[in-house]
Amino acid sequence: MNTRHLVDPDFLPLIDLLPGNDFTREALPTIRIESESRFAFVGAPPIAAEIKVIEGDGGPLEVYWYDPAPGSRNRPALLHIHGGGMVIGSARSMQQAPSGIAAALGIPVASVEYRLAPEHPFPAPQNDCYAALKWLAASADVLGIDAAWIGITGESAGGGLAAATALMARDLGGPALAAQILTYPMLDHRTGGDACPHGNPITGEFVWTRAHNRFGWECLRGDYAADDAHKGWFSPSLAEDLSGLPPTWIGTGSLDLFLDEDLDYALRLVKAGVPVELHSYPGAIHAFNAVTEAATAKAFTRDLLGAIARMLRV
Image 1 (tube, rainbow, N blue to C red):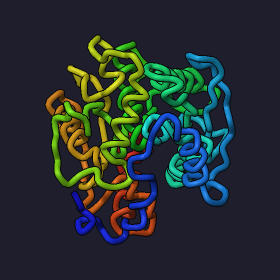
Image 2 (tube, helix red, strand yellow):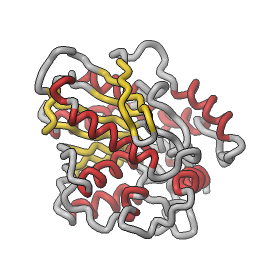
Image 3 (cartoon, rainbow, N blue to C red):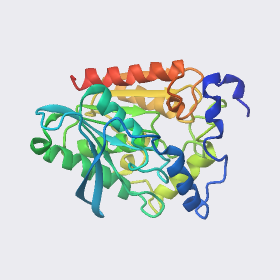
């Protein structure tokens, strides 16, 4: 497979962002070190983070809090979950998205430092994200936010964890979410493997490949059989019932490995009565919005920020 000719020329520099097929447990410590420097925000973020330490499922949990107007009251807020295929990345190094959203929209954003697989397989990362959501809602008065207008967002694995957290919040009786904003979310553990239901011949050649995806999901799965009532928390595409979820925005790339699972999830949400806004960006590979000056990336950012503003009544 060679889909290079289909890639928007603006995104060609991203093709070598991640190594091709060499994700292994042995190589993971080195890959994590490299990713920390690669994804670290260059320069000071628009809004400096205040690190909150909360009680998580596995002990103390850090939440990076970006507040553009401390002391304000009754504001909508976002919980942000960073990407990294379930195995790399950190809220500490990946500050651009949450800080940028907070600065652009003037609303506070919390970014959770969830535990990574394989050291902490399912349900540890999901439990951390859910703990952060519960903390955000419970601390609404102290933080100056309106608990009725909390949204959840994330990119890639973070989008998948955001979708999982929304399912957990629905299934466990709250906190209620006003919106879920999912950027090329990682939803289906079967994608790229023998049981993949999609088989799209033009997706997933660059940045995040089928081999990467198999590795990430294998690490997250651990010894979980994914055959019980919580399987949707592990892999949201496995959830049998998507009713009762919050209004949803999904943005993905036409060449992204996750295109098919994202389109399928959006359609199933619609059929479950959930309001959905869906965007597929032509010539866009995984993480395309990292090329911030590209025309398509600018369109994505306008769509994303516009959706958040509408959905949270900013």
